[in-house]
Image (cartoon, rainbow over all chains, first blue to last red; front, side):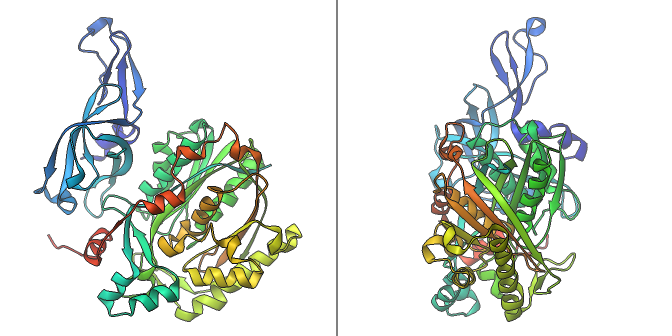
Length: 129
Length: 350
């Protein structure tokens, strides 16, 4: 990932900053600047998610790309945040403890790095709550 | 009075037993564990480092007390394992707790006492009303070369203190420091592991500086060991801390709550102040706490602290973040192979 692109999305990744359409009460992560339901009538404001949610479904990754190979086996899950929107994230737990419906909470972790001399990318992952 | 507004700690969940490290290197595990008074130590997950530990500790501190992160005017992160040689850990912490951008920030390094140096700096900035709150952090994923004596204790963990004048949960009555150029432990630029002077690290390093710093504090405060309810000393192992406490006249009961090293290891910049956090976890209003850190190279910072009524007020919720005891109890024991992978000691050429 390029440095400028990560930097632009830094607050979204660090602090789960998304958006909320106050017209139809829909939450978005990653943030949307336009509500697809309300279009021009929508009033979209910035929103920091609480960082708690539930696992909707998950997959155990045993064969990963080079950058994530050291982490295998690891869990990638679709998580429904308490506010209602869904996101994809790694859940850090023993793979045999994973289950659909698991309550989870955010933690701050390394997401990756651009080689040994490049920048380190930080952001949000989830652990069992 | 200037003091601790709130605090939080973080310890990764992975542990390796001293006996397992000794098994790999042919040492007498039970004898080494007994000799050091260290039975297991923490290690980071594959995606944890000093910055992630510092952020988790800072968020734990902010969970315990409702303060506006924008009122934090300075962040200092003490560590000897900052992920970058050039690029401050403190700004990533600031961004992750939403304290940026109107703040000053820097990283500190003074072996195992960079965290207490950060506390002293934020005390000065808040006491002089330059800022409302300062965030002082000591965190490390400590390095120990495979097979070296340090490998038995070098651990991972961190603690964060918000310092300010506004109704602290503990007043910092006084601080005193003692420093000298003593080459007892060092790591050269670009090298992955530190070196130490063996037995030289004990008397001219640890004991000389902690005893001198502690006596300075006794003189300044007009106190003696029995005037304190609790005492915490830098804990590279249990024996050093127990011996220095005994020499100064403290009892085993006074140091017990803050002696975390037997089942945590030496978290370097976090070591003495994780002991302070563990003591604050059980402290009551009026309790008086004595703290002396030590950093190789060498120096010590001593603190005289009195717990206030605020620690039991509605404004401060100790239960909103895990105690050090709870963090120590949440653990997964791993073998040396997994430990080596987590610590990056296995180099894979791709």
